[in-house]
Image (cartoon, each protein chain N blue to C red):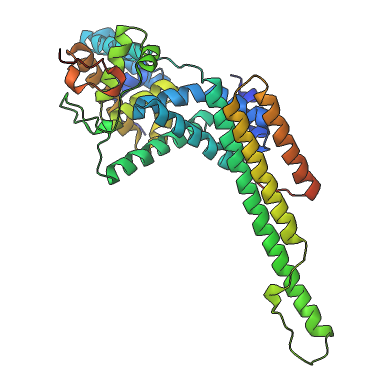
Length: 178
Length: 207
C-alpha cells in the first residue's frame, strides 16, 4: 500500500511526462494549486522536456537500409546452414549406429570390420552439404556485389537471390528455426 | 503505427519474410540510429551498431513473445550493444565520452573523433540544436542514456528502468539530474577546447 501523502520530485517528473496514476496526479494538482514553487518546478521540467523535442529523427539512408538487410539475412542464412550441419551430422551418426548394429547382427563372426562405426555414413550427405555451403557462399558474394553496386533494381535482385535460396531449402526439405 | 499491423509484421518477420524485416527497419531504425549516434558520437560506429541491432533482432525474433513492447525489446538490444561497446573501450584503457564527471565541464573525448562537418550540419540545423548536441555530449553515460532513451524510444520510465535493469526511482533520479545538467550547460558558455564530437568547430590554424 502506498502510504505517501506528499507528492515527490519523482511524481512531478512522472506527472510532466503523463505517466502518473490518476490518484497521484490528483495529489500533484492539489499541490500545484497551492504552491507557486511547485508550479515553477513543473514549468521548468516541461521546458526541459520540450527542449529535447528539437532532437530529430531522420529516415535511414537507402544504402544503410540495404546494408542492414543484407547483413541480417546473411547472418540468418549462416545460422540455418549451421543448424542443417548439426542435424545432418546427427542423422549421419544415427545412421552409422544403425548400420553398425545391423552389420554386427547379420555378419559372420569372422574378421573384424575394417572401419569403426563412426566412419560409416550415408555417402551423399557430405556432398549435399558441401553443395549447399557452396551455394550459400555464392549467394553471399552475389549479395555483396549487388549491395555495393548501387542502382534501382537492387532490391528486386536481392529478393530474387533470396527466393532462389529459399526454393533450394524447400527442395531439400530443410526446415530450421530462425 | 497500428498495434495489430505491428503484430502481423512481427509474425511475418519471425517466418523470415524479408519485406516484413525491411518494414521494421524503416519503422524503428531512424530512432534507434539517432539514439546510438548521440550515445557513441560517431556516425560510422553508430551505423555498425545499428546493423548489429538488426542482426541480433533477426537472430532472436523467433523468441519474441510480445510480453514487452517491441520498441522496448529493440531498444534493449541497442542499449546492451552500447554498454558492451563502452566496456570494450574501457578495457582497452581508452576514455569514453561519458566518462566526464558530472561536476566538471571538461569532457574527455579522446576516442570520439569529430563527425564530418556535413553530417554535423545535417543533425544540427540551428544553433540551439547544435548546442543541445554539445550539451548531451557532456553528460555522463548513465544520465545521457536515460535522457536519450526517453526521448527517442518514447517508452515509459518504468520500461526504461527495466531496460537498464535498475529501479524506477534510479531511472527517474538520473533523468532529473540529466535534465538539470543539460539546463545548466545550455545556459553556460561553451568551451571550444573541450568540445565533444557533436559540436566540433573548424580548427583555427596559425597564420
